[in-house]
Length: 449
Ligand code: SF4
Image (spheres, helix red, strand yellow):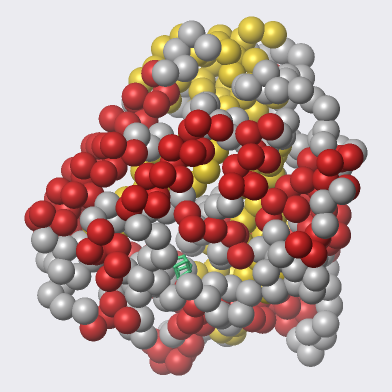
């Protein structure tokens, strides 16, 4: 049997798409092996969201050079730099853009013309018990620094409600206990469907599926988070109280230059509203340092704003100019040394905020989804709570892939040590009713837009 080795860089959507390719190839007889192993086919799913991600993509391509194997490169870097890749690395056998990515199984099997083939369902996220479900592709927001609308397309492409629900059900039947709904711009889900559907409609339907599964939302643009969605999350039994709301900058002027579609006042009002309705919620965020023209005073504003917003976790990125975006030509650019210093300051702040957030739950009992692998360093069981706290605790093998109740007894570096309270399948953090809301959601008009 031919061996295939796959590597992924970048976002959850890319990870999901790699799983899709893996599944397609497995079905046609390939044996997936890890990227370090010898294989007949190497596939690299690249990313170009930052210069660093692009650089990593190139390093992997160099590493995969092997005259006797086939090398296929896909993903956002491949989409943005097709010609450059072919020139720089003539040994690459196939460069496949994002639009053709879902068709890689057919291309490899010599059936590349069959573009109409439907996506298969993903069932093999073997490393974890959390599966990603991609519901939407494309973004039309054109933030000035972002290459995504150019490499993923500006047209929104949403999967139908029924197709997504079938996939969720399929994953639940296979034993997955949590899914993460992802999209290039998740908040735009359904805006292109006819009749239109909203993300909240999908969640209401998903909560009513026969097989129960915990649902987490991946990144949501703040201006697309509706009151209806917040209200639904607040009373839902299965939607995790966790929102990732990318802020990018806490300075009004920089935010405007980034082309973001909210003001700082709107953002902080939104967080107040979310916390009022869902007190246990974890709010995580992305912040970019070193946007062109970011002076010390702009950076200090960001620092202060982050302190005030009390995020539970921060992802810090350094600006890198992407050719073709509007920010590429904005001057003056900030030096790498300054960017590094600012990143470090924000990472330290992020660690402190994580510690503060997690400490609030000391002594409380939360529901943890136990991962299939023990922590390699300490041998403990480990998993995430609904509100995204990583908890380590002692327990038996049989608890793997189960929802268990764990009391937090110590907090360190934003993570927690816990002890099991009981091992039966759990109710949730907010002691919510397990009743589903089918009747209510049945009454919701999906065409309400
Ligand atoms: S919303 Fe902005 S940052 Fe996010 S993918 Fe779209 S253009 Fe990029």
